[in-house]
Length: 65
Image (cartoon, rainbow, N blue to C red; front, side, top):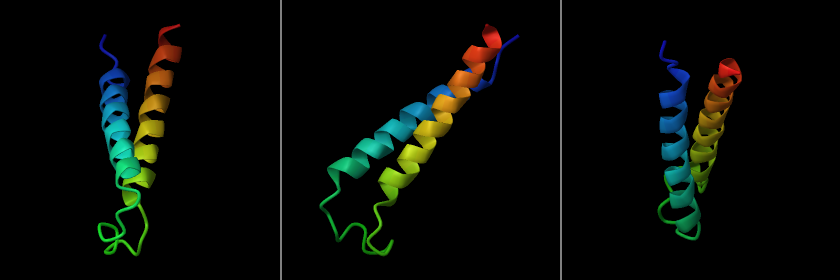
């Protein structure tokens, strides 16, 4: 049986990593984050997505053992 946590974990991990890296590269661009009250939303949401993806992969790995 296919475990859905593996593709979901991979997708969230890859997209979260890309968004986090984007947030790190645009850290000094204050005009870009003016609409979000100066908060770098890319780093925050990228990190949340990355952690969620890693947790899903961990749960899928733990289930197989």
